[in-house]
Image (cartoon, rainbow, N blue to C red; front, top):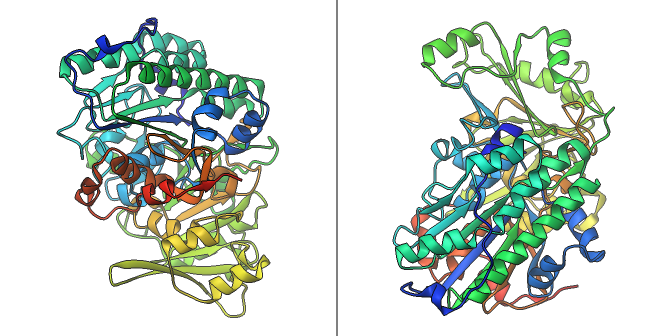
Length: 539
C-alpha cells in the first residue's frame, strides 16, 4: 500500500488528443523493440478474473487475455507488499537480496527506521536497495517512467505534484490513474528531443490499492478504479500503436500483490500482546534521519521494535542483552513464537489470526512454526545451483507447517529432499502457501528481516479498521496478474508458473538485450521468453 501522503508523487500530463502519424516520429530513431509495462498496485487476481468474466475490463481482455500470454500461477515476492515488490520487478532480486523488505523496515545495526509513507520520503527507496535496475542496465538506451516511485536510473521521469497532490488530498485516486493514460504526448515530446523512443516505458497505477484497503477488493470503489485503469491502459496502447514507435511493441501487465478481504473483528493487537504478556517496551517507529548515536539513544529506552506491513505481515525485532547490535537469545525467540516447540508458552502462533511464524535458524536455514507443526527450511548450493528442502525440527512433531501433506504426490516431493527453486515453485503453485520454501530463506538473508516474522491467517490482520489487506504468505496475497503481449508472442495462450522477479530479465530479452542480464550479477529471476514463445493455448 502507498499511504495518502505518498500520493503527492503521482505523474501527470496535459490531456492532449491522440492524433498520431509518422510526424510523431520525425527525427526520432525507432528501436527494434520496446516494452511498455503497466504496474497496477493491488490488482487482485481473483477480482480481475471476476471482472473479466463480467466484461468490465475490455482493454485487458483484448490486449492481454485474447492477445497475449498469461502466467497462470504468477507469484509476487515475499513479503507481498508494494515497495519490496516495486524493487523486485526492476532488479530481478528478492527483497531479502535487494534490501527493501517492507514499506516500513528497521535496521538494528544502524538503529534506523525507514518509512516511505511520507511525501518527503516516498522516493527514498531508490537510495536503499542494492542491485541494478533494468534502467541502469540500459545506459545507452532511452527509458521512461510515469508516476512510479521506484525508478532509479530511468531517463524520462514524469512526476507532477501540484495536480495529483490535489487529487490525492481529495481522495480522487482514480483521477490520478486516468491521468497516466494521457501521458503519451509528454513522453513523445521528450523522446523527440532525445532523438529516439524509449525501449522501456513503465507506468504506475496506485488507485486500486488505495480503494481496496479501506473498502475491500469487492467494493464498488475498487471495481470502478479497475475500470478507470483499464481505460487508461487502453488509451496508452492505442497511442503507441497509432504512432508505430518501434518495429516490435511488447506489453506487460503486472501487480505487486493481491488483496485479501478482511474481517474487522479478526485482528490481533500485537503491541498490546508484547507489552502485557511479555512486558516488553515496544517501539513501532522511530528516527529516520540524524546520526546513529542519537537514534540509538532514543532506541535504548526500548527492547522491542514492532513493524506491521499492509496489515497481514508483522516483524518483531528484539534487543539483545548488549544492545541493539547484540542478537536476542534463541531461547527467548523460541518462547515468543510458541507452538509445539514451546507448548507451555503464550507464543504468537497460539493466536488464530496467525498462520505461521518464522525465525532465522542459521545462515542457510529458517524455522517455520504453526500452531501444531514445526519445520526447518534449508538451503545449499551445488555446482552454483541453489537447492532447498524441508526437514523436521523434532521427529516427534509434525513438519507440515505448510499444509503440503494433504496431497500424496506433494508429500512425496517434500520427502525426496533437495530440489531447486523452480521445482519448488512448480510443485506448490496451486497450494495455499506457494513458492514459500525458496523465498523465505532469501528473505532472512537480509539483516532487516527481523527476529520473528508472522504471517496472518486467511481474512485476519494485525491492524484494525481496514477491510482489505495483504502481506501474508498465503495464496491470495501472493497471486498476481502477470501477462505478456505483443510482438511475436502467441495470442490467447498461457504458461504455468512464473515470478515477479522474472519480469526484469524477460523484458531485457524481449527488447533484444538478453546479454545484459548477466551484467546484473546473480539475480533471482529468470527470463520467461522461451516459455512465452512456446506457450500453449489458454484453458
